[in-house]
Image (cartoon, rainbow, N blue to C red; front, top):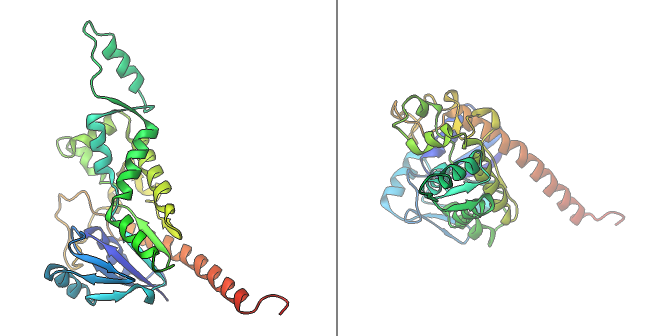
Length: 285
């Protein structure tokens, strides 16, 4: 069994639920709390340390000590501690991203009016991705991973917050900005740019792997099929999320993440063992 420490917020629940199934060879320790922030936890060298009573309460529920040495683990996973779809869509409220479908036609229509208006400022897709990358680099997950890498070479995995459920399409008044992105056929472009920003930010940290949400679990570009959201649990695993929750994924999606991490980590560990044998017993000696 490979020992893995999972650090994150309420979205850790999808991995916690999947861990009950045991369709992988990972021994998981959870260091998590809803709305986890730097006020709750600190990284002291290679040790994760609880900073307040509220955090301790959640660690007690999860059966996790108040301090853990990450050197005892084969990998560390940071969950939903980086840029999600929500800041990505907020940028589109104040800016037009050139290069997205139909944006050129919309700009031309505004300029062809009797009193031309430019409307929202325009930014290029490269600029949009650069903004998302900058947000990622300011995120708690990136900061923790950077600090951890300074003292340890343990493999790091980054999982971002899942895209919201397709159920938001049933009531356009909920999540209106995301619904508008889908209605304007911008969802594929937005998700491609967001994923591009993740793929180019996290590998800046050595031996850090971004685990993307599997393509077959997504719908309309920036949403998640309901089958991977229905019945999602809370972080205290014996309780379900409210029926109107559209943000948290269930154990089915969590299981896909764990399988991907297990498969990749086996390759990493095999390579490390091979290098260790080569250094210990050099060829020809």
